[in-house]
Image (cartoon, rainbow, N blue to C red; front, side, top):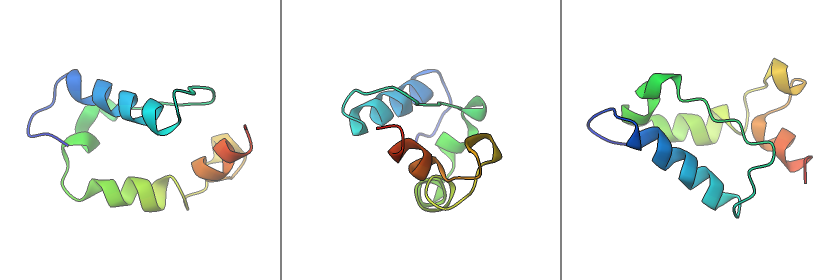
Length: 73
Protein backbone atom coordinates (compact mmCIF):
# COMPACT_ATOMS: atom_id res chain seq x y z
CA UNK A 1 0.00 0.00 0.00
CA UNK A 2 1.04 3.59 -0.51
CA UNK A 3 -0.24 7.09 -0.06
CA UNK A 4 0.09 7.91 -3.76
CA UNK A 5 -0.54 6.04 -6.98
CA UNK A 6 2.30 5.77 -9.44
CA UNK A 7 3.84 3.05 -11.59
CA UNK A 8 6.13 1.85 -8.81
CA UNK A 9 3.20 0.58 -6.73
CA UNK A 10 1.80 -2.02 -9.19
CA UNK A 11 5.36 -2.93 -10.15
CA UNK A 12 6.14 -3.66 -6.49
CA UNK A 13 2.99 -5.75 -6.20
CA UNK A 14 4.00 -7.77 -9.25
CA UNK A 15 7.53 -8.30 -7.87
CA UNK A 16 6.03 -9.44 -4.54
CA UNK A 17 3.76 -11.93 -6.33
CA UNK A 18 6.75 -13.36 -8.23
CA UNK A 19 8.80 -13.67 -5.04
CA UNK A 20 5.95 -15.43 -3.23
CA UNK A 21 5.87 -17.98 -6.07
CA UNK A 22 9.61 -18.57 -5.99
CA UNK A 23 10.11 -16.68 -9.26
CA UNK A 24 7.65 -18.91 -11.11
CA UNK A 25 5.44 -16.68 -13.23
CA UNK A 26 3.61 -19.49 -15.03
CA UNK A 27 -0.13 -18.86 -14.88
CA UNK A 28 0.28 -15.53 -13.10
CA UNK A 29 -2.32 -12.90 -13.99
CA UNK A 30 -1.66 -9.36 -12.80
CA UNK A 31 -4.51 -6.89 -12.98
CA UNK A 32 -3.96 -3.51 -11.38
CA UNK A 33 -7.36 -1.91 -12.10
CA UNK A 34 -5.41 1.33 -12.51
CA UNK A 35 -3.82 0.82 -9.10
CA UNK A 36 -6.73 1.95 -6.93
CA UNK A 37 -6.82 -1.16 -4.74
CA UNK A 38 -3.12 -0.81 -3.91
CA UNK A 39 -3.75 2.52 -2.16
CA UNK A 40 -6.88 1.45 -0.26
CA UNK A 41 -6.68 0.77 3.49
CA UNK A 42 -7.74 -2.67 4.80
CA UNK A 43 -7.82 -4.08 1.18
CA UNK A 44 -5.10 -6.70 1.78
CA UNK A 45 -7.43 -8.99 3.73
CA UNK A 46 -10.15 -8.74 1.07
CA UNK A 47 -7.74 -9.70 -1.71
CA UNK A 48 -5.79 -12.38 0.16
CA UNK A 49 -8.65 -13.97 2.12
CA UNK A 50 -11.76 -13.60 -0.03
CA UNK A 51 -10.79 -12.74 -3.59
CA UNK A 52 -7.83 -15.10 -4.01
CA UNK A 53 -8.98 -17.98 -1.81
CA UNK A 54 -12.79 -18.10 -1.82
CA UNK A 55 -14.31 -16.15 -4.70
CA UNK A 56 -15.07 -18.33 -7.70
CA UNK A 57 -13.99 -16.89 -11.04
CA UNK A 58 -15.86 -17.83 -14.20
CA UNK A 59 -12.69 -17.31 -16.28
CA UNK A 60 -10.98 -19.99 -14.16
CA UNK A 61 -13.72 -22.57 -14.55
CA UNK A 62 -15.48 -21.43 -11.37
CA UNK A 63 -12.46 -22.05 -9.17
CA UNK A 64 -10.73 -19.66 -6.82
CA UNK A 65 -7.36 -18.31 -8.04
CA UNK A 66 -5.57 -20.33 -5.34
CA UNK A 67 -7.26 -23.57 -6.40
CA UNK A 68 -6.64 -22.84 -10.08
CA UNK A 69 -2.97 -22.05 -9.49
CA UNK A 70 -2.42 -25.13 -7.33
CA UNK A 71 -3.55 -27.34 -10.21
CA UNK A 72 -0.98 -25.78 -12.57
CA UNK A 73 1.98 -27.18 -10.65
